[in-house]
Picture (cartoon, one colour):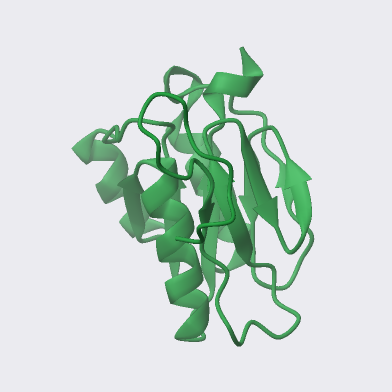
Amino acid sequence: MSTDNPTCRKCYYPCRMNIEPENAGNRQTVSSYRDHEIVISGTVYHGSLIVTPENKPEPWHIGSFGDLTVSDLIALKKYRPDIVLLGTGRQMHSIPAEWVFTLLEHGIIIECMNNRAACGTYNLMLAEERNAVLAIMMEEINR
């Protein structure tokens, strides 16, 4: 974590986590994340997104974990992901086991985690040259 970021008045640690990989090339990488924004390849976003390595991030209509359906996740198949990293907000939420099996039947591997972990894992997957899709819910903003 960089020390040039603003510090939180509550915990006195930098609130924005800088996580951009060194050798990203032209791929879409997460530069930093905090609860109310995500910076992808230098552009600031404030809403739920679908992020893929090769394309500009797309707005995602999911406002909170409760809005999510298995059909929303199946739709991510169009990106041909090796893995879908589902950022579920500040807290990690799990999808139902039935959904996991349904997604596997469609050839989709999914990992659920909080947004901070999903952003870092996405960049790690890019460093391994994997076609990861980051589907991130920014529920704090969308409400």
